[in-house]
Length: 241
View (cartoon, rainbow, N blue to C red):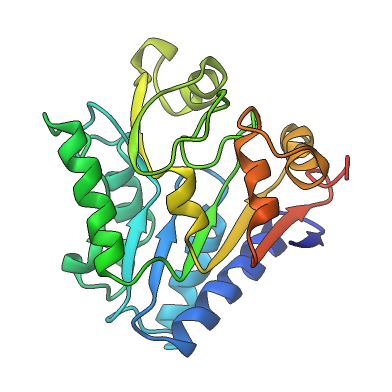
């Protein structure tokens, strides 16, 4: 586990984008695991800049997103499908057939989860997985629990997660209470993992992830067991290390 402490959000975003770009340059048909939320926005903006300057080519890249809200269609402006389209995909030359995001509107959840896992395996697994981290230590939507959920599954969102995500909605009542998320096993099978965190609100979660005991109550702590993890944090998020 490599800990990279940077000055600020901009530097964090640039370092993360450089890692992603290196992966794509070395392996043009890379399989990328992508995250949503505020944290990776700067990284996506930097990747778009690099694409526009002909530094990277996304034409052979495949992507798999960590999660999607259950009950939101892809056209909802709060869906992660909408987020990815507007913050990355429509700005680069990725083949739409190579984009994979869980379908939050399916009737048969179990079938969708099995299908998602199958698509990841058929793609050869995820080469590099980007993660954010919740204030409660969640990665993807794997919430604190007594057990680690292995593969893609339906999640009941934690109250802290709902409260945190309510800033994206008109009111907290509009926040979905369930999501489809990659499981811990799926994430851990990624060949390389890059976790991003900025701000003082993430300091506790980062300290427990890096130095705490491995426990489902801090899902990100499992990353201590992965052979190739880079954690990029600004000084505030690293303040309790």
